[in-house]
Image 1: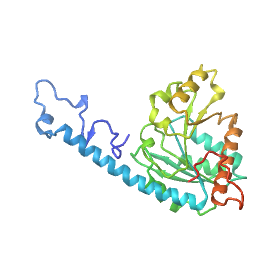
Image 2: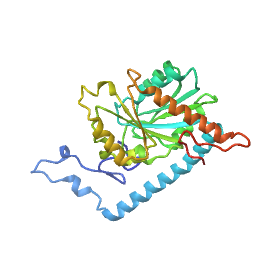
Image 3: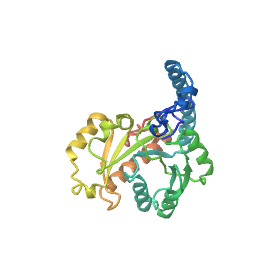
Length: 283
């Protein structure tokens, strides 16, 4: 993980915690201890929290600007989050293959390194641009804003932001999206929502992926759904297989309703009452 959001283990205001491999032999003095700064833990913690609050405050302001732009353009914007290996790239790939003939789909991909996923999604029919974060374990609103300036101008129906694979830090960073989608796979365990409640509590949608191998990995569906409903009762749940396509039509139909709902919000019919059909906020 990274030091940008204070999640780096042992990193406190530029002081890197020691590693057990760096201890000197018992018959030698601990030179590191002699030079280690005498930090007041409470003061350091307060400074750490202040810096983190400033970082999040700045991010929220930029996210608000992104959100205004997305709304003005009429784009439905998803922030898709998951642990590494849950299959979120495969989900976007399947969506692009099946819906790029009906929707204009743009994708912003976040990874620590390589542009492999962006190339893969381009080949699937989307227009994709890669954000390479280096050591940062999450995307931020400023990164998305910069990527937008490099994304070809188009009347996007759907803009998908594929966040860095991580179920911790990305939950704290608003990117300006209308919908936060958390993906979990049947290989990760039924208690994933309980282990990472902050992420799941922030989701409007939870997608359970890799259902085609659920029986092979002895997936306990009822237990998983109960855990999700306990931790994230607000979330709409879809059970799919990106590999086989099972369950994906329900997901597409939901997105289509949301796209239509957004258009109705922007251009309501005259002399008729606006019906909110897709679950998007009306303001």
